[in-house]
Length: 401
Image (tube, rainbow, N blue to C red; front, side, top):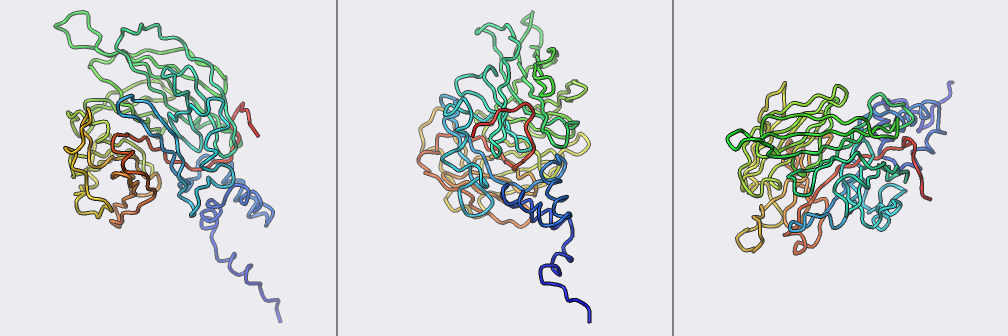
């Protein structure tokens, strides 16, 4: 009579590696590392999860930066956990701790988020002079040296945008990355009868060299201004939305730039709150809000294709849509803010008064993921950064215990 299998052996035999990876990826870091001792198979799967930059990771939570609409400054940074019922970012960081391990704490603002890493800056600096790249799970951070000075006077009409991109050729055990600083000099013209030009200066920091490389500049034959929205990094390129109806595509390796059209024209004062530009399920997406009507587009072979048209009056918000005329603010306030696309499914994060919600386009389900004081949020704008944990070592990093 043969030996009968134990219950645990029997169940594990019927689980594919893909399913095991999905289960393991949802564990807190300390528990995940402990699972390496179960078997050689588990050791291999856990090592792949920890070190592979190509394995899709479930959404761990949202970093939320609250910005004052009048001062245009990030007033606070919060984290909301989407795995489990607590307010803890796995085993490492809780809401009280936040990003307190960074030298710039408590004046931290989040600029970008990619692959489990955050690009942060000092709230008092807008020119990239005090920037940090960190892993909030391992509490590792790198202080970036000041970028090259652009030499523009304060009288010049220029904007500064920063973006984080993963180095796709990096070692599987170490997270290497690049930071891009875009300085846009707007409305440049020698003759009042000529069409204004835009000059774009690009500075690149590499974690492999620990230095900013040689700067490149580009002349763009139209007037544009990149929006204060986080850049999208997809298929080796950075995408930046710009007003009134354009976006920039910057190839990270070849370092060439293209100016392309958005599918809608943004000719309203509140357009920065009315659009969302992001990545979802490996594609480039764009959402536009006009009153209670929302359109979602996807880029396919350099063309925009409509994916969804939604009437927000019909999706069941827990609070009624705001009558914006009741509020006396210097700019118009949309009844709903579009915050971010879900990275792994056909869904989008929205804000209605004090409710942060996730709307699933496939099922039509509307889920409240976070609530806060609605009275404090009417005049606020929010930058939302979907975050997935990563345990890879941050190159050349410090760590605060």
